[in-house]
Image 1 (cartoon, one colour):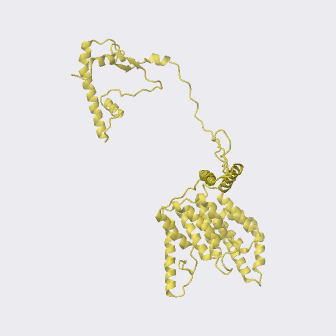
Image 2 (tube, one colour):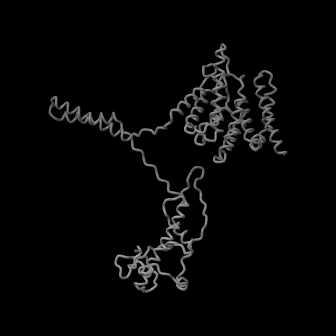
Image 3 (cartoon, rainbow, N blue to C red):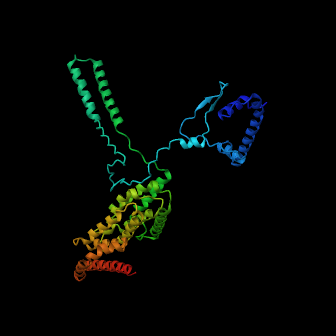
Length: 451
């Protein structure tokens, strides 16, 4: 017996507006409809198995219909809901009323409205960090006013004073009254503490793994090491062979740490801690040139690491770099080699501008302006002038042309007076260092222009 009943054939014929179909024709068509359906489903199952799936989809049915040269089912293209109609003579059978339209009927229908022309309207999202109040931007929600903090001690004292006043107006209390008043005061203090705990929120903790904590502790210990200590950088000499071997091992560890900071991809959670550590140690170690060298190398390794994003912490590291570049006095004495520290800081500033200059387009102009100001102030020491010169040289030939060239003639006159001093050899040496830096900067810029 076919599972397709003659009533189903009648309903299909009625939905297609074929007309009246006799019962004999419906009984004859029922087995053929079942055969066609089974054939389509079997072909659809083949497509399903070849697609490595276990669920039959409508795409499989359409592919089977295309294989049989039958028009596939495209579904309902309109936005109108499906209209169901009840089959005549069958109360429990309904079908989707989808009449076929002739070409003349489709042509006679009114045309839809013309869609709006596609266009692009630019507008400013932010200007120098400030969002303009225009209709295209989202409205800025005003900040909620902070609730004032509750003074627990003042609330408790006020509660005790109120209880004492009530007891003074009443008859002299006995022991039970005293106990009750003490309980009321304690309850008032406890309620005040509860309100305080509900107002004050605990700060959000930055969770680090134990491995990252150990790594940061060891790196911070090596960066904070002073020359001559057990964790020194190896720049000083030990009192005996054992001290020298310890310094050599510590120097090897520091080199390994610098290499790890440059290539390790898992250091991004430690970025705020490293930036704060370098900034704080840099302020404390301006008289220790080995420590400044080590901090600059560590910062250069972090800047060169592709997995570390230092953009949110540039406001912490850039003052340290500029201090190492144009600081008035670096090191314990003027005879130390602070020139190499200034040159290394200049190279690091150029590296920061090259890496973050595109998203933060104002960083290089601001550094150039700061160095130009330090160079033009004649009351600054020559060490500051030297740092400004090497910094502008590292930023590129355009910075040299814009900042050094206009002030080159008056500054050379100032250097001539300093280089001709016979009483102060240190001043003469500093003047010759600045003169050599100017020759190198101007010569490189001229060679670049000639090319």
